Length: 98
Image (cartoon, rainbow, N blue to C red; front, top):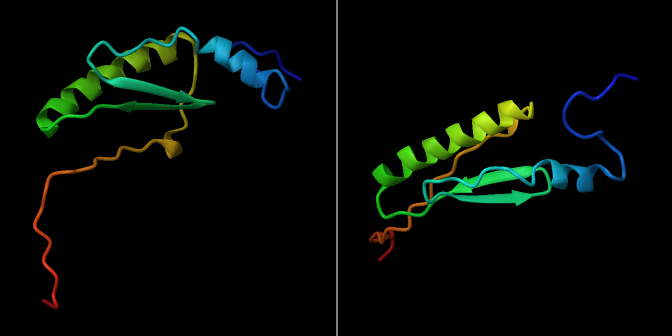
């Protein structure tokens, strides 16, 4: 058994409660980006009509979150990182059989 220097013990019945307390002070983005937490998952999202508005704001929020994660020695599993872009602009659909 090794001592825990950061984080919460894995598999303990108290782990979800301890994790919630541990991340309670996670910084809210200052750029209009929204932060969503669910158990041990974190999502940053932003809605805009122009992708040029989204990218710099999301990057700033990611940088702020990264500083906090480093401060508290929380590792991010890079295999589980993803970015998704939804385009809701109206488009004319063309069907081959009209």
